[in-house]
Length: 83
Length: 177
Image (tube, rainbow over all chains, first blue to last red):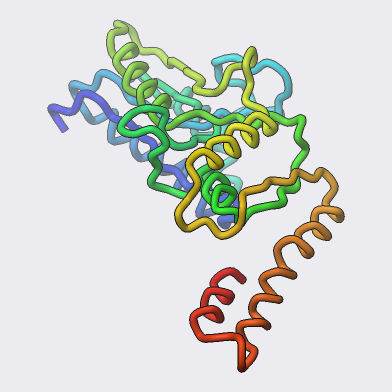
């Protein structure tokens, strides 16, 4: 923990017919727990998360390299708690 | 969701996010065409090259955004290194797709796949590779029935006949079906 300088999180489930709760446990909380772990690493230089180009599939046209807000969702954590 | 959670909770960490599209086998490292998994585009490529997948229900004008897996892994390493050089906490986003200027279309994928499979055919090839793309779902079902189900059923029945058929042939027919 005191010597780690790079964390790459590329684990995810791409089974689109998984139950929603399982998919959230793997794809959302997997990343969340890795982030918690990363915060405890003293020498960490970069936390790398591998997402997918289809996260903004609700949008059409040119998609920039930035994080878009979901329509109608202000806080992702609240939305997850609701589910 | 995970990306937005990262944006909110990253605190004083330097975060890199990579967004690859559909990942296909390697371009050159460690070997051209090497793949370990049949997820994503690997499954379609293999079954089509073996001649098992013959009719696909798809709109040919769409983009099939394929990206070789070594390109993605190289980007992950390069982007992580680039982010780690930054001084202040930040979120860096990188896309890893075929570009909007030169997108990989389904027609292109089909053409390239068939040309390479004809040049280097599989030893265990089942049928001659031929991909028919059909946009209409009902028409696709009809095509699939006559092109895939009827031959396998016929082979199964032929293999089960007492005089001409034999066990090996029946096993092979059952595998196909």
